[in-house]
Image (cartoon, rainbow, N blue to C red; front, side, top):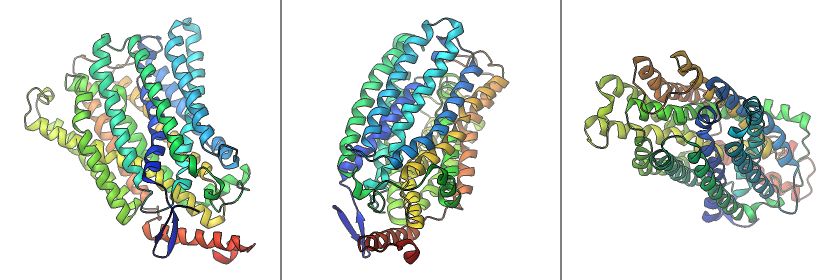
Length: 496
């Protein structure tokens, strides 16, 4: 094994810094696809003519489908070992399928007869989720081959946090401050231009990710350095049932994701910036202002993770996120005029809003960023515990639970805005701010994300893979490998 690091007598598989950075772009690549589809509700309801609840239900069903097929994809990963490795082919295939379906959605759906739109839109979302899952599964599973060093694994989160902050902030700024103004609202031209440039950039990032993982996508880095796992599909339930860290991490991260999805949902952004604050362009501008603080927060959280472990940094970040969301709710309840928060006339309320928003958006994203290297920890725990190398299954079971919970976001938003009268269309930029709309905006933007983080924190109390535990696990895996090379047939009984 090359590129090793010695720490307390333990040998680790390490990666070059540029390899970690480039491979992280696989997540950025898939996130760009997700960003492009973030605005599909406005396309489906405003251009294709589908009803609000129909679209919300379809998006929920699509995410559920994404979760359902994930275990099958994980099984494929764990059984695959070809000329181009386990992970590289799936990045290529997944990106092509996902990108193609997005292009078809935005260019064909509205041209079909009304009777066919629902079925076509549904079919395209299903195809999209298959491609999306193929590529995203690699992000989680391949962490195990990239590095197992406790000093290096958190570095993924730095690059992921920085890249996502840049692409998401830039993407939202591009849409809110440029495209929507250029084309006079969410017109067809917005979706055409967004998908064209976004998909090209996503493909470039996928290629760079392949460069990053290429030299590590080899058998000697797969678990115990053996051929493909012997685990059968029937045995997967036993693996999940016996892996407590996987259960707790999956539930905790799912609620993190649910809160962040609601907070970042395009409709919620329109309600907060376009109606409550009266200036939708603030969405991109404030995202740009909080970009640097968000990056600094990521560096701080990862620094803590490298010193004290991923779990401690995860919980600390979640708590700060909760307090920041509650602070934002309190701010809006105390000020008389929400439109006083403006970049044209910066006062105390604007400064406080920017500070709290930077803390909330920065720290609430840390758990979802840290969780990817934590999945690698869970996979190593299973390898040490049973000898099975099943990172595909670990990552995709995690995704199944994540999708099961986070898929509720569109429905939650749709139901809540429906309660106050928005049954046929979502609230749009410039609408009159009513008391029900005011309350619902605060609930969706800040209240529910805070509640989700509290659930996550509670669940993480039962996740026991701290820094000390992971060091022992890596020592155990090294002993198993050493015994295996010496021909010790019963290594698991002797060393566990």
